Image 1 (tube, rainbow, N blue to C red):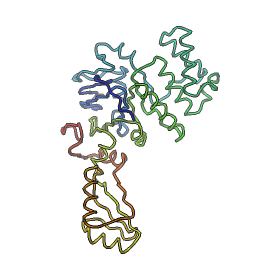
Image 2 (spheres, helix red, strand yellow):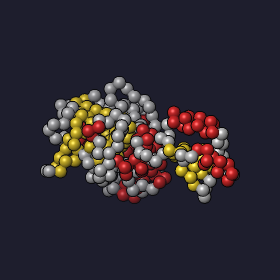
Image 3 (spheres, one colour):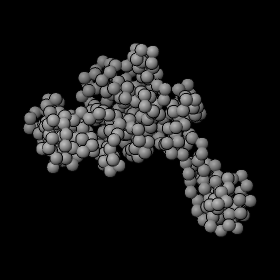
Length: 329
C-alpha cells in the first residue's frame, strides 16, 4: 500500500444520493480519496457500490440534494468533460471486443481518445508490452483467457493516461494467479501517482491493496478507515499464550485468572484490541506475574469479520474512525 498524498483529494463527494423510484440506493454518502492512494468501497450485492462508481465517473447523474462532487479538482456538475478527461473506468464486464485482435482493441481506444496515429500505435505497443500481451496482440481477443481479457481491458483504460481510475470488481471470476497479477499491476499504477477507486467482492483484495476502506450498507457508509482501524471495531481480538509444559500452563492459568483456558492445546487467551499500547500493558502484566509462555501470538478479527458485522440488518458499531454517529447502521 502507498501513503503518497497531495493537499487536494483526487475524489471528494458530499452527500451522494441516488434513488430509483421508492428504492434509495445511496443515502447521503460522503467520500474523500487522497491523490495517489487506493480507496476500496466494500458492501454486499445491491449496496450501491456500482451506482457510486457510475455517478463519480459521469455515467449517471446523482439525485437533487447531493452536495458538490469534485474529481481531479473538477466540479462534476459544471465540468463533466474535464472529469472524463482525467479518469478511466474498468467496469464489472469487459469492454473488450472479442471479434478483433488485442492490438486492434488498443488502436480503437487510441482513436476514441483522438490520439495521432503514430502516438496511438506507440501507446498501444507500450501498454501491450507492459501488460504482457505482446505475443497475443495479433490474436482475436475472443481467444484470450479471463485474466488476459481483464489485463487488456485495463490496458485500454490507460490509453488516455488517466490519473484517476475506477476499477469496479476488476478481478471477479479470475483464478488466484491472475488475481495476484492484477494486484501487481494496480500497485505499479499507484506507485506512479495514479489514484485507484476499487470496488471488490474479495475482502482479501481490499486488505492487500487499499490505503483506506469504506463499507457501504443500506445506502450509507457503515464505517471507514484503514484495514487495521476497521478490524479493531470488531470484538474478538485476543493475545494467545501457548505452553509446552503442562505445569507451567497450570501455574500461568492460576496466576492470570481472568483468561480463557484451552486445556487441550495448553493455551490461554487474553482479550486485546491488538494495539501497541494494550500489548505493552499485557507484556508488563505477564512480567509482573512471572509468566513465561513458549509462544505469544496476537489475533485480531479479519475483514471478513468486519464485513459481516457491519452489513448485518441491525449492526451498530460505536466510536468508528472518521464516521459520524448518525451514519452508523
